[in-house]
Image (cartoon, rainbow, N blue to C red):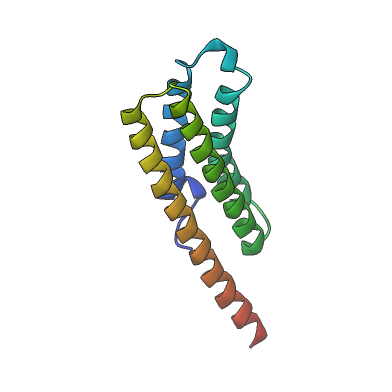
Length: 130
């Protein structure tokens, strides 16, 4: 991969910005959600970058792919938590739509990263057999 570090990836940058936005948005949620939905949204959103970072520091591409997959799971979890926040009227429809769109973009980018890593892994594995 021609990226010097995971922080240089657009998907990492977008995910980090989204996490910061969600920390701000959840400050407006009811205080009784502090250990519920607020915590879930913050943990799921920060998990995306945390798993990208951890995976990039693993021993091989296979492990990295596994952690990118975990990031995709976290972004899926975040989609539900955001939907729940909207339906509980903790977030307005306009903000929901903007954030939901960002989540979908990040999800597609994570899938692209998975595909890229799979191709790299296949090329590396094939070279090793020659």
